[in-house]
Length: 261
Image (cartoon, rainbow, N blue to C red; front, side):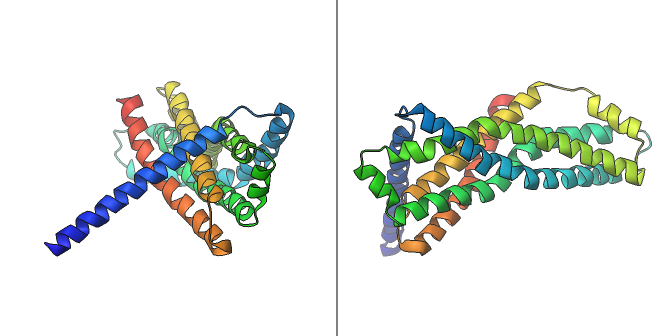
């Protein structure tokens, strides 16, 4: 009975802590999405964050997408050995795999490590060095000034990374087709064009925007309220990556169920 009581107490404490963090996160977003006091400064910060968060991610997203496209061609071709199945389905299955899952969910998981740790560590360092406290003392909405450009930049521009990943994934598959001769390039291109559904592009773009909103806002929340010195900054960055990765997988399931079925 004592063990059950202790377990019940721990579970209730976990629920209470979760609800407390959730409420604090919602209040944080309320501060973040207040109207900027100076739009000129906001757009300047927006462009800076676009370079820091989006443009700097192009190389890693592009390289991974190229290789994944090639790997998908090899794996798909090796599993389609039945002579009754047209080899153009290799291109079709590569296209569907890229647009439905890899270019949004897998790329978002990659960005959770890169963008999430960047945002959490930057804001965490500002918190422990009391720069955020100084801004609050001067009457500046530090949450809106520091976080809003990051969140909007990641949310609005991330679909461009998804489209780039999709294009380079298709290109990587084409390069492998040309180099290996697993199927003819004409069959690959025919499969890419076969039964194209434009809604899947919107679906993948929506998922990417949602995931990057979660990455930027949760990571900013962790960094903004970091405590415990430099070790606390490291812990907040690590927690932001873990939490956003779990949220990405959870919302991937929810959005897929709602939009595709």
